[in-house]
Image (cartoon, rainbow, N blue to C red; front, top):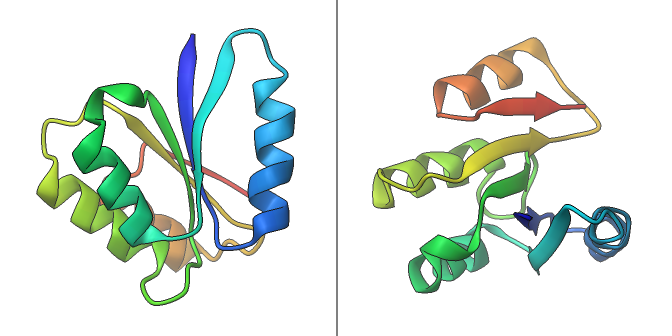
Length: 107
């Protein structure tokens, strides 16, 4: 079972992804969060509870790349994979996300 955390500021996106992914027998959504601070709090409390983080590139207050940098800095041994999500992908942002430690990028 792959445990997922979804981080997106749009509730409809979080709920839609949760419904779709949770329907797969090998996946379970353990949290659907609205922003970076909520992700950092979740990982601080339950680092073992997540295998993959789906992280929106554009978040209010701090973009996904900045959140990813904080995540990697605060939890350097976190084994969870991070996949960046966006509907608008510019080459510079993709490179920045990968340089910050993203394991993948989905448009």
